[in-house]
Image (cartoon, rainbow, N blue to C red; front, top):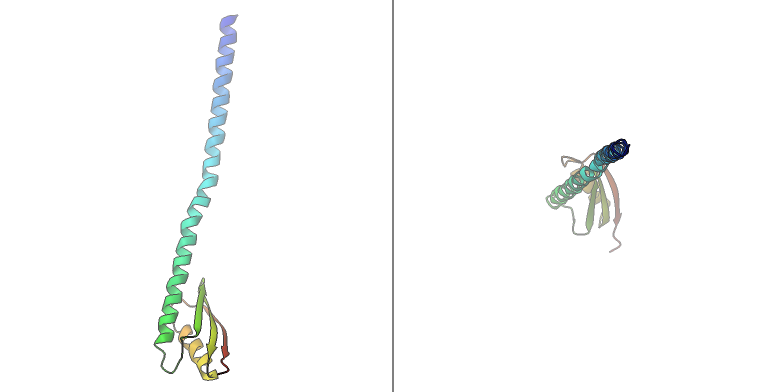
Length: 116
């Protein structure tokens, strides 16, 4: 009788451990995507910074454009130009130069004319 009771306790304990192990294993893949999302976010941030630098380089090489007061932001290929320029023609030059940069999918031009 004691042998049957001991066997039942051991079998029950093994069953519980197996169930806990299975549950722990099923939770591991759920945490994996969160860990792998971080490199994607880092890669996207690096790509945005690289595009920002490329646009700034293109603006600095554009003759007749005063780019010292232009701020560039990039987000997934969409580039936003902010700041001031002295003439309306420079607003158009900045847009055109930005559109010519590889990786730019759209340009949001928020440049304004400076009053001085």
